[in-house]
Structure formats: C-alpha cells, structure tokens
Image (cartoon, rainbow, N blue to C red):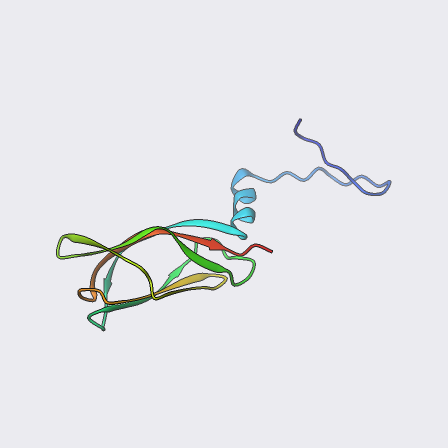
Length: 118
C-alpha cells in the first residue's frame, strides 16, 4: 500500500510528496557508501597523503568513516593497497591521512562508509 499519510489530531494537512532524489538525499545524511572519485594527488610530502574529500551530501552530524573496500594508490602505472593512518569524518567532508606510500604523486580510489546514525 502506498500513498497513505497518517495524521495526529482532527485537522488533515496536504499530502506530502517527495521525489526519489530528495528522499534519497535525506537518507544519505545518516549513512553514505562513498566511492572516492579517482583523483590525482600531488603531495608535498613524498610518502604521505592528507586530503579532505567533499561529500556530495551534508551529514546530519560529524560521523564515523571506515574503509568499505581496500583503498588503492596508483603510482608509476601500478596500484598498491594502503590503509589510512586515520579517517576523520565531518558533516561535509572526510579527511584521509595515509603514510608510508612510495611517493606522494599518484591516483587514489576506493570506497568508504560514512556513518552519522543517531
């Protein structure tokens, strides 16, 4: 059954219609499975990444970020998996701090869980 709206009290209000995109964005404020867009990182430190990534949906509060799939760092045509030293999650971005990379210039990709549940 769809198209039903429950009301408290004796006064009915207009039926609230939301688009799929609007409803999805409201849900993603609490949890977002985020594929990091492949980007080129030209680091000033030859072995570290400190990069803030803007989230497409603002979270309801600072949350918790965790690795969903292994993060990869591509340099000189080959990929190497890496584990971030830490992930910091804020309402509008996630910061990745990684050390021990072969050099600071290359491409990064992977998936992160961003969780701002109640």
